[in-house]
Structures are given as C-alpha cells and as structure tokens.
Length: 114
Length: 113
Image 1: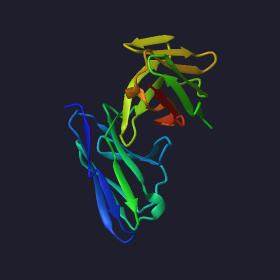
Image 2: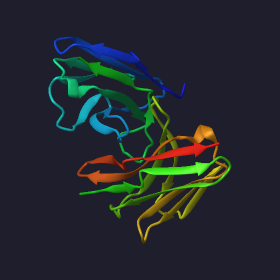
Image 3: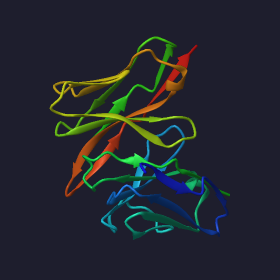
Image 4: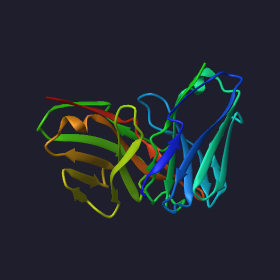
C-alpha cells in the first residue's frame, strides 16, 4: 500500500459548523503533514507531526486543530471557519520528518466555506 | 528569505520536448524536487535530485542541476497531452531543527495536439 487517502473528497460547511478532515497512510511513515492550497498556487505548510507529536505549527489560526491519534491517522478539526479558508487541503506523509525524505501526497479535500 | 522561482506558463506541441526551469536561493539545499499536479488532483512526486549530482534521468524525464547558478531544469521528452499539468519545483530549507520544503509558484504546462 503506497498511497495516502483523504476523506471526504469535497466538503461544504457553514461558518458555524464543526467538521473534520481525515487522512490515513499505511506505509509506516512517521511524519505527516497538513497543507492548504489555493487555486493555481503552491501548497502552504500548516502543520507537521513527527512520531505522532506536533513539531511544526506555521502560525495557523486556532480554528484549525490538528490531531494525530496514531502513526497511521491524521485529522484536521475545523470550527468557525471563514470564507477565505476555502481551499484544497492536502495531507502528506514521509518516511521520517527530515525533509530529505520525499513527501507523498493524498488527493486532497476540497473545502468550501459558505 | 529563501525563494524558488519558476516561469508561470509553458506551451508545447505534442511530441516535442518540454523544458521547465527553476532557480533557487538556498545554496545549502541538499535535495531538490519536481512535483506534478493535474487539475483537481493532489501532488505527485515526479523526481528528485541530490545536490552532488549534475543530472538524473528517469525514462522521459531528465533533471539537470547547475549548483553554481542555482538552476534546476526538468526536461520531458516526447511530451504527451497527459503531461498537461502544473509542475512545482521545491527545495529543502533548513529552519533551525526543522527542514521544510520551499515551493516555487508552479509552471503550468499546456500540451497542444
């Protein structure tokens, strides 16, 4: 199994809703990442988990709350989002946290905040 | 700060070679990557090159690295319509105890039949 899966594929939520994005990999990777990507722009790093512990938070607003329940799963909890948070949210994993190891990306969740 | 630059658009005819160029600023970068993103899809790692290499070839893909000029290029031979996508160049940036990928803005490749 050499893929990163993400659910849901699409999500529409209101500004008062609470929702979660899920990411899963079974490659034995110990680093997992959340990125936000706006149309035709490069991905922006949000969070890095290293051995299930949060190691990088790129000053992301607290309305985004990551969670890593185990080495295979990564969640992103969303609450009170703004329309400008609409984007493609990408999950990635790598064998180890050192960026020398290539990152494998999931297909993303396309989020629309209304 | 650290920066990666790419030309934004490239248009080629089917069957021709495509060359996508990238310049970077962090001379200590050890690895440089090329990612492909098709419309509506996630990012796919195409290839990477270690900084002690000048060239790497993988089937239709050739990566050339000029460390002196901090210039990286991706050549796609016999370009097909399925190669139409955005191609991102990325380098490793050392930020204290962490290493992060610094991304270019992406080159949108259009392949015309």
